[in-house]
Length: 297
Ligand SMILES: [Mn+2]
Image (cartoon, rainbow, N blue to C red):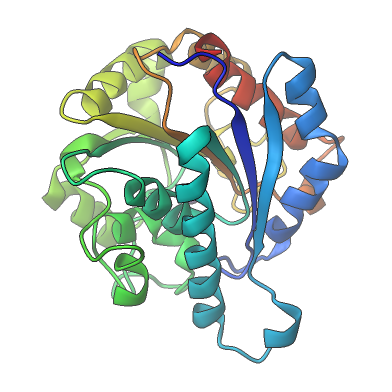
């Protein structure tokens, strides 16, 4: 294992994938609050490497979807580059940024390599245009990465699906709609709902998740939607859902969670600084990165 791989921090200032657009300001708040300095003080080699946003000033008249497409494309290229000499750590932004992040990661792999994915989220994010009531793209990235949805998104970087359903699992789910649940069920995606986590404990669940994402793959990644956490611990999110994972429990389990290789990339999404309380959620972001990455330094 290569020690001391630099963390390449990338801001994904996206908001129009959601109905409430406050997540767009998360990366700039994280920069201002000294996330990079914080990680360096903790012993990491970390540097802001890029920023993508979905509001190019000269393009406000472009249709929302088209603007998002351009942003995902830009993000995917930056992430692919960031994989070459380090570990991309992407900060959303609404969770539709995952379309760009993980398409970029898969774009950095050889044909014989594949990605396993732990998706920590209160929701399934597995809608298609056909099943979504709101039409919001941040409810669709899991489906899109599996190859279902608008071809402008599913064909990003390359036409093949970015994820194999056997190598994906969802952790923390407690709010979903029938259509998306049906899709994931048909594909056989392993979903760890909150009651299972409460019954077995997060440690046991994450151990099973580790097996799922590393068994048949050459690398693994993790996408953390902050709404997986209990809103009492993480109020500053786009779509809060009660009865979530406690922040301390997740931090503790992630510190112990150590597959043989470091994640190829990490993503933390849905921070909405406008509804945060005493910077509680914003502060958690740095702690989450440290908990996941520390043992691989
Ligand atoms: Mn999500």
